Length: 309
Ligand SMILES: [Zn+2]
Image (tube, rainbow, N blue to C red; front, top):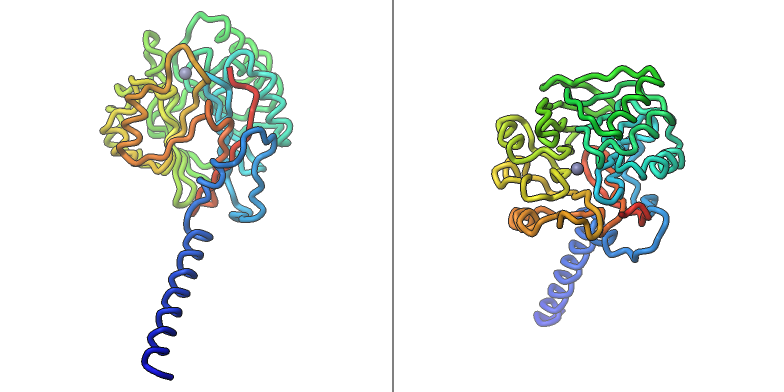
């Protein structure tokens, strides 16, 4: 082989090697978030994960589109945990959603704090499913929604528990740590239960509507997480820079309603997330967002929903 031909062959081999390397990178390493986000709107079913099944021991976290409100389901398809239950008129929709997933009981239900956009559908949930443990902060309010929830709890003989700060428990083969529980009746948002779920190498932080005031109180705790549920629907009163830096999430989920009157999420918060290189997913844009993790990777799906409002 001539020197020139050898050089040419080398060049071809190097190009081929680089091409294969790039292909491997995009197939295996990059989380398929971009593909999923580019999916056309209007699909009713989640994008199938079969093509790239994580493993059998997967936990799914559904950030359900309930408009300007919060509702999060954590499930490993055997056991389930619920965080908040949307607005009043989301109750029956949520019951149907959970029934369609074959759910008939919850290990834990968290009512992060007693505002309507977090406990609105809770009475329907309580009446429709078996609940083993019901957590809420030690605050009461006089709203009808709150009374409806207490009535349903009484009807079903469910005892309310106030979780203690720094309590740890295992469920769904994951570890849970209660980071904060407030009891300020004049500030229900800052009474929110804040907690972290760790499943092997991946962790998720749930913040309710806690403001930067609460964030500053837990800065010295182990709050680092791969995924942050952005506090208070992305309002400017949450997501302080020091908090974002300490959590250092890769992804931020904002549960927020289309054209809401509060102008959530605020530009201020979105800019902070952007500056810290945090990828943002929003229920007003993406619909219901489902994260799946096997403890090593996190994948995303989204489901077009009609609960926005
Ligand atoms: Zn809220």
